[in-house]
Length: 504
Ligand SMILES: Nc1ncnc2c1ncn2[C@@H]1O[C@H](COP(=O)(O)OP(=O)(O)OP(=O)(O)O)[C@@H](O)[C@H]1O
Image (tube, rainbow, N blue to C red; front, side):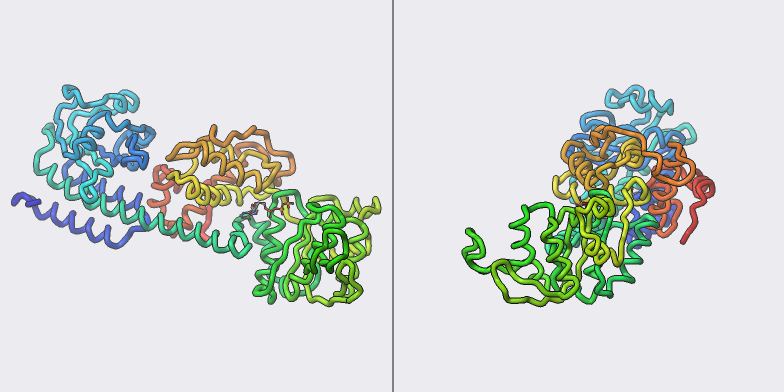
C-alpha cells in the first residue's frame, strides 16, 4: 500500500516502535496486542478499541482485547460471524468507516445496550494473514467532534496487518510449546513413565525425600488413597536411582488369582502346571538390576508373602515346578491403599514382611490436601486431552476453575484426569465450562486444610497460587499477567498485596 504523503512523523515513529516491539517479543501475545491497540487509539485519537479474533470453528468472533471505559464488560461478548460491523468486515475482508453508527443497518447495538457505552464513530479493519481475515480491530469514537478519516484507516490497516502477523507467530510458538509438552509426555509414557506434576509444598517435600532415598537399595512402602499417584512416586524412585537405565517392572498383586500371580512373579518351567507349555521368566527375573513395583501389596496371598520375604532376605527364589535357585538383584517398591497395619493385626499380612517392606515408608496425601496441585494438574490434563480431541480450548472459565478447586476429589488425580477428559469431549471451545465437568459438587471434608476452612479462604488460597503461577510464567511482569488473568493491573497489584504473594 502507498502511504499518504501526509502521514506525519509521529505516526511513522509509532509504527516503527510497534514493529520493533513485535520483532522482540512473541511470548506474551496478549500484552503485545494490547500495546498495539493502545498505540492505534492514540494515533487515530480513538476513545475505545477492541480486537476480535475469528474462532477456530469459524462460527464466531471473540473479544481478545477490549480497551476503554467499558472494556472489561465488552470482553464477555461473543459475536456471530454474520453480526454487526465486525462480522461485515470479516465477511467482506474490507475496512469500514462508519461515522454515525446509529443510522447504519450493519451496526448491532447489543454490546452497547449491555455495557451502556454509546458509540458514535467506528473504524473497523480486518487483520489479515496471507489475505485471510483472522480478526478485526475496531476503534470507537473519534475525539473532537469529527469522524474517522481515510488517513486514520490507512494507519490502522498497517497496524492491523502487523498485529495479525504477531498473533499468528505467537500462536505458532504457543502451539509448538504445547506440542512439545504433549510429545515429551508421550515419549515418557512410551518408555513406561509418566510426567509428574508437583506444585504443592507437601508433594515437593516427598520428591525431595525420593531424591534422598533413591540411591539406597532398601525397600520402600508407599501408602495413600487410590489415585493419588503412588505409581508415579515409584517411577521417580527408580528414575532417580542408579538403576534408572535398567528395567522398571510393574505388577498389580490384586489383578491375578494366586496361582497365576505366583507364575507371573517368579516364572515357571514347562509342565509345572497344565497350561505351562513352555518355560517362562517371572517379573523378578525381568527386573534384575532394576526395580520391581508391587502395587496393591495388601492383596498378596499369604503363601506368596513367604516367598516374597525370602526374596527380600536372600534375593533368591525358585520358578514354579523347578528346584533350581535363581538369584536376583532387585529393588522392591511396594504400594497399597489399604490399612496395612490393620491387615497385620488381623493376621492377613505377615508382620515380618511388613517390617521388611516398611524400611522406608512414604505416605502420599489425597488431592484435597494438596490444593496447589489442582490447577496445575487440571491445565496439564487439558493440554493433553485437547490435543487428543483436537479442540482448541484456551482454558477453564472462572466458574469451572472454582468448581474444580472446591470439589473434594474422592477419586483423587485419577478422577480429575477422567473429569477433564470427559469435559474436553463434551465441552465447546474456547473454555471448559462448569457444566462440562459434570461434577456432583460436594463440600470438602474437614481435614482438607489447616485453619480457616471457609469457601472464601479456600478460594483465596487458590487465587494466591494461581496468580503466583501466572506471574512466574511471565517473569513477574504485572501488565502481562493482568492481561492473561483478564483483570486491571491496579487490581492485580492490590491482590498481590492482600494475598501476600511474594517473588521466590
Ligand atoms: N503428580 C501427577 N502428575 C500427573 N499425573 C498424575 C500425578 N499423580 C497421578 N497422576 C495420574 O493419575 C492417575 C492415577 O495415578 P496412579 O496410578 O499413580 O495412582 P495410585 O495411587 O497408584 O492409584 P491406585 O492405588 O489406584 O493404584 C494416573 O493416570 C497418573 O498418571
